[in-house]
Length: 258
Ligand SMILES: [Mg+2]
Image (cartoon, rainbow, N blue to C red; front, side, top):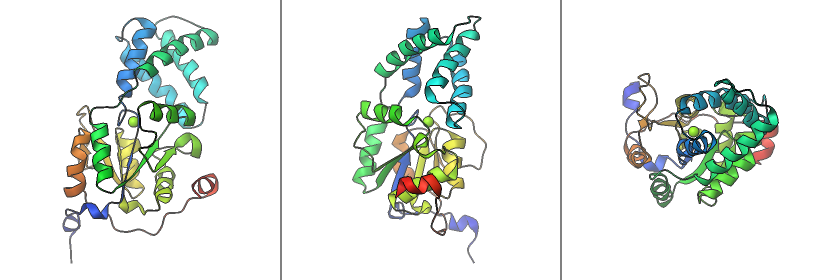
């Protein structure tokens, strides 16, 4: 009889058929671009922690379909300036957001490890997909702007499905679109909960890209600090996952992946 630890032995790359990746702060240095946008908006990025906190609060409302993306952008800008005692109306917030957005988009760019990693994955015969929590048109524009329009076999975008990471349905939708079982698919992203743990709980191989070396609870998912480390992880260190029955999706999601 084999123990759980013996079952978690090394695996061959051949057992993995596809890799899904998050976009923001995983392939694309969204933080750097957003800091650039903030500098254009207020003259410096000293208020970056406030901007990040405000974004986290408001983006969560967009991801859960509470508000649409444009409304989120305006409300976030109002809340950001309110935190510094300035009350602005929606029209002024929209004007300032437009300036910030243009500056940020001019700074969109990939991390240095993104393209070499994608090239290695593709050269290894793996299929590639994106799983991202984002508005559809905006994210597709972003992916094209950084030269990745043709880099993936599938783009799975929360806005198009009506569900977002870490909901297992978005991961199962990606697997089904790839024609693969969850245990054949790796998902890599910078959010421990939404990406790595969400994928793991959906039966995929979740990998946490912890670029900042953030201290995390022990005993969790495989972790890398750079995409340069992903090939080594794939060929040597991923624990095996027992095969599960085929995943099912229903309603709007099933229609989208047919
Ligand atoms: Mg991300």
